Image (cartoon, rainbow, N blue to C red):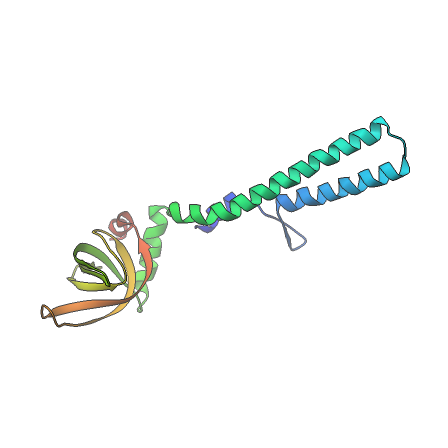
Length: 184
């Protein structure tokens, strides 16, 4: 997930070099009110309007803290899922694609067409950024047309059809086809 999205979803305030979330603020306020209610009921033993109001405020704050903790748990579960579902904007992907393309250890490839889906991987024809095409083997991965990857691998001789084959060792990034077109 992109850092600005993460910051927008989780409002965090820094006070004296400490990270304070809204849930922590609600928890501290709830504890302070609960202690205040305990002190007030200890000082004023008979039941008065003040003690009843303090008790109701404490119960409302306890409900709020339970609600905020539940929300925090829901966000902890939902944020990773949302991060996988929501792709970064095309402009950010294109910029990242350009940065990866400058890395000598990575090659950016686009799947032109998948020719063979096997149990152990996929054979496909890929296009490199310079426009050249060759056969490629993606072990343990099922790829489809127009998928764009930053890969690490090696070029070698293919024994079956006597052609040059790019053997993918690792797929490190995946980009959208629109980012590929925009970065060209």
